[in-house]
Image (spheres, rainbow, N blue to C red):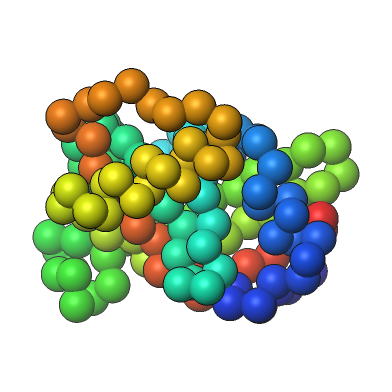
Length: 140
C-alpha cells in the first residue's frame, strides 16, 4: 500500500515512532545491494529520514561513492529503509546524502534519542545520512 511521504496516515506515522530496528539498503559501487540493521527516524514535515553512523562505515562509503559519481545535485544514492513487526511493515525510499556539519548531526542524534529512548555515546566520527524521501509504502 502506498502512502504520502509528507502526509502519512496516523497509523503509519505511529508505527515509525515505535522502537524498531530497521534495515538500510544502499548500493555498492558494483550496483549490488548492501543491507544492514540501523536505527531510523522519520520526519514527514521535512520529507526526510535520518540514519546516524560512523563516517568510516560501509553504508556511508557506499552513499559517498554514489554522491561523488553523481554529485549532490544529482540527488545522492538511491536507498531504502524498512521496518517490520509481525504483519506490519513500512518502507521509505529516496536519495541519500551524508551530512557532517555539527548542527545536522546533533539534530539527528536528538531525534534518534527520542525514538529509541537512549542517547548514543559521543562519537567524533559520527555523521548523518539524510534521505530525501519520494516513496512510502507499507501496512501499519
